Image (cartoon, rainbow, N blue to C red; front, side, top):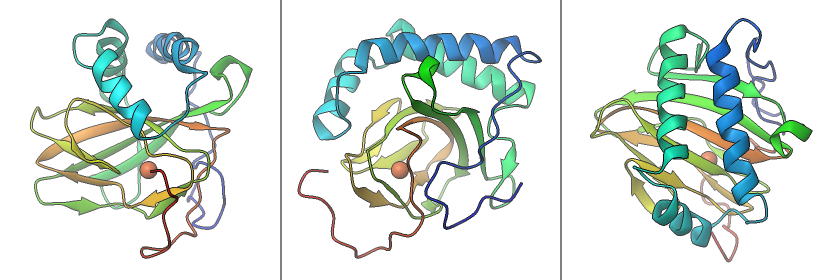
Length: 194
Ligand SMILES: [Fe+2]
């Protein structure tokens, strides 16, 4: 299914087949563990710093999220829909629902040595983004700059290009209520807090 550029929800909207892929159930479980620890926090600069301090490399939840996402990539259900050839791909793990604290769970694979930009988008309620490195040099750009292994968390109302450099990674990201907009444009005003 082609993602619609104007729909204000996270796309694609089809979940992974949890029955077919036991690894996806394990990933969902670890996401739930993470959500139960951060569900009262708000996306933004402070949360990004907090996550990198407390849930970075070496943290059991972070390590499991990375390992299970990479396993899912090998099994073929992670980021398996091409947006710009094999170097930019996306897939939905879960839609927002009670079991996910009403966050959506999405995976985006990006692979580029040079800086590469995906689809410009806005997060009306913010975003929590787990950087799953395939190459140990790969970095994802958040509102605070380039991020290797760890987290970014753009605040509510922020908009940007998803950007990668120095290799391949997967962004495993969570959107409150699954909200994302593809109508924002570069140059639009950013919120006071990013
Ligand atoms: Fe984003």
